[in-house]
Length: 530
Image 1 (cartoon, rainbow, N blue to C red):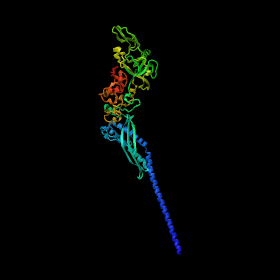
Image 2: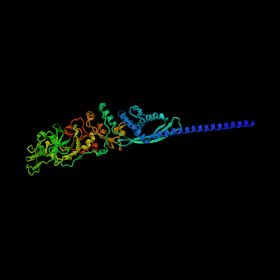
Image 3: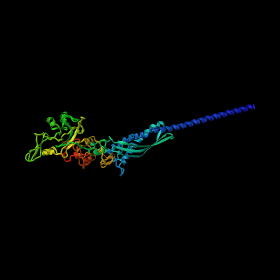
Image 4: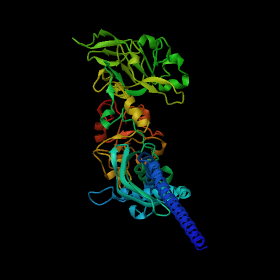
């Protein structure tokens, strides 16, 4: 009996020990699973934070900041028309431009302290990095991550070209999970450029508004053709390599031919009667005469491609003057003193401008666009003689003078002027200087830009008179302008003496030299411009 009790006790103890072992094993197993789950959770959180940061690549950050700054430089540009940026201290002229762009980048607004008059740039919250960070936070909330660090430092802005604003800064971004057990941070070094093409010139708008009033503000956009017009010296006029032997007056216009049509030069009869007054008719004297007066007299001027017939005059004693025939305003010498006069029996007498250019090939004239809405391309030249028509009529031998005369190609300067392009000139203000107060008193040797101003918005003669049409000279009445033949408002003597709707194109002596306009300037000693 005692033996059976002992066996029962041992059995009970054994079973108890086995149960304790089983319970301990289960406990260790459970704790092991719990530890494993915690480790996996932490690993998952850390991986999520890292994967999220990896999605915000330097390239994406560069794109984000460029979009924000592109919007904000346009806002700063427009704001500076009415509220010019205050210049910075000596040695840091662009301090307030930099400060304004930084504030716009960060907050979508800029303090009024940066501007003359104290008006701040109105807020635009979505156009800022803080708005981007807030949106990033909202999008990451679903996966348990938030922006824990966001800081921009070393912000710099300047120019890298005449049409480019460059910027650089460091952006520190940190991400954490909401339990603050996993965190990742990265520093982005952002550097890029902004193109100013298409933006309104704030200096020109500001100065024209102040000079002519709100309704006459000149809203000129920045456009460049750096391959064609890299600087002012690349924009000039050229005298065609064509010998001339006389004529009278001057005129610029498209060409028509009295003979057969040539490339981009239609025949005289192919041009509508109402349009002939803007064309210059080219051909030999016989070709022109074959058209009859009702045709050739409708044209604005002539280029004679044939030489006159010359015969030795018998006037006086031992005279070497030659009488002319088969030409406009043929000269005849008569009497003991060989008085010169026009001989109507030897050639048609005209009061219109013409030039004698023997052998001139009309296809050597440059191509030019017609501005009458036809979209035609023609060939145009400026013909220039030594004396005006009335001066030749007073003393016919003046027709034979060729000082300062010739045929000139103007299409380069006309294209630059009429398309409103900007080009580099060290004497002009840069783009960033145009944001500042008193822009036209500044200049940048590296990035200075300028343009010419023509059109109905610049034809208020009470305001602009015949001031130089270069934008940095337009608002200074003390800069006397010299009219330029063949440019807008100065197509011929009559238009240049009038008040055309485009305004009279004129430049200062310095600008005349910069753009190679001396040979066609109205003060060059050739046929005048009133």
